[in-house]
Image 1 (cartoon, rainbow, N blue to C red):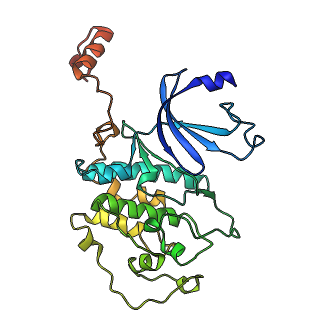
Image 2: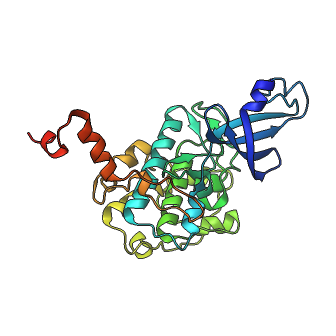
Image 3: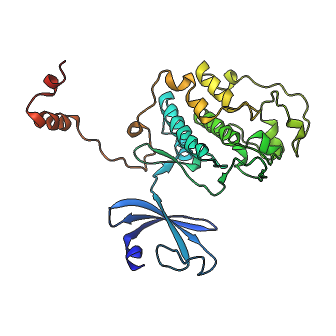
Length: 306
């Protein structure tokens, strides 16, 4: 236990919640910077597997992530280009596709749960509401997902739902990346429903909390996302389809023309970051060239001739 305790050195306090405290720490064996989440437990019996040996906390060690998508979206000094947004969306959908492939619903996707490190790598975090899915008879709570990213079937009280709830949240996040403000900031579940565009949705009236609204004309997406091309509008429409059975999956979304059309996604190391995040300086190209040329004594230009 003593060896495990000494492996991680605390560097800074990052935050505290009702059930855990998070620290920035250093792994003395590898010199890697990590995030240590100390989860508070109720008894010594529950803490018997505490890797730090504190007997009052179970500590989880994660990759340290420098910032999150919410911070990036709100930073007025950052310009988010089409290529930047595409890069964030590809990483989000690839990560979510892995979860869904393994029968896991995240159930709380939002910008501040999409963590980004100094190299532009995005990872999905905060699995406090995550749950296995797949059983046709499993009844779930509908009180999941932060309201602004909550799918309409959840707002109507659905207890049986699938990957569509995560896909809706991704659509809201994409819209927020484009607008730089939350797309559907409802103040209550009822207000949230009035902000969602109505389309044909078989079975909607059978949901537990269904309410009949007066006819409300929807606004075309083109009028909201005025600079978006047709390929991007198609992706948004597919993610934000009110009928969960017609909402696209991660794999279907990644196959849509938006991701293969120009511009290409920005490489991770070139994605914009808040000024508070320091990126490791890139190796000078001239040094790379010298190293390559020294490998066999030939010039790089000569070795690239066909």
